[in-house]
Length: 154
Image (cartoon, rainbow, N blue to C red; front, side):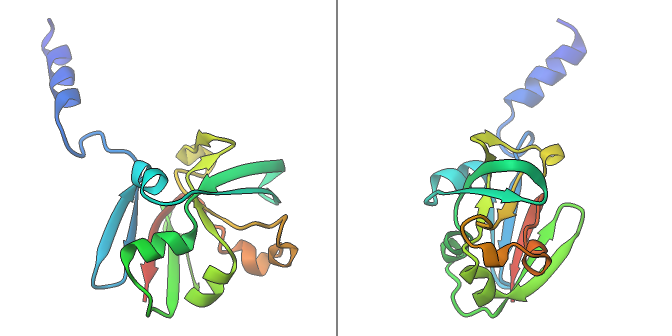
């Protein structure tokens, strides 16, 4: 067996985060919770949104935990602002109460399939634009952060 192949096999056999999947960090300044896709999908109740959006054609189904469930999982109730941050450091800050009132989800899947970074994944804050038409404007679209990597509560 070649030395290169042996090294690849050893690396693949290592436990831990060597080949870890995408992660979402949720912080409140004092505490940080790191959730991977499996935790977001298995440890939290799932919500499905079927909606249209200016970012794709037609109606699409998104699924994932509600933003409220993610925040409650961290055990935080007293924060007043939320910042959503993407892999490219796009950031948007707003009122936590306002954000929770939008019924946002942290989508982990689009039409039942995981989303790659190229497809605006691995996580995308999605709003139910078709069900709540008052949210379908630029003032709310800015909260639909794709390639979501961090949620900061402050």
